[in-house]
Amino acid sequence: MEKYNPHAIEAKWQRFWEEKGFMKAKDLPGGRGKQYVLVMFPYPSGTCTWAT
Image (tube, rainbow, N blue to C red; front, side, top):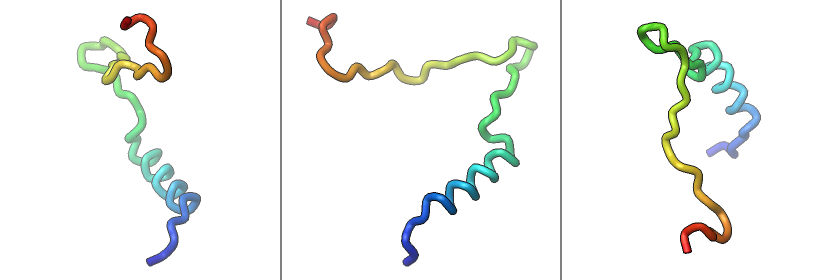
């Protein structure tokens, strides 16, 4: 098995994603434009003072 070479692999897939437009946001139906959707709330790292 070949050793993993991230530089060669990343360039190939980034080019593929760019050509296919996978990382482009599309306008929503009805002319509402683009929206931001929060899938997960930020995870607090460190001491959480508000929960005590």
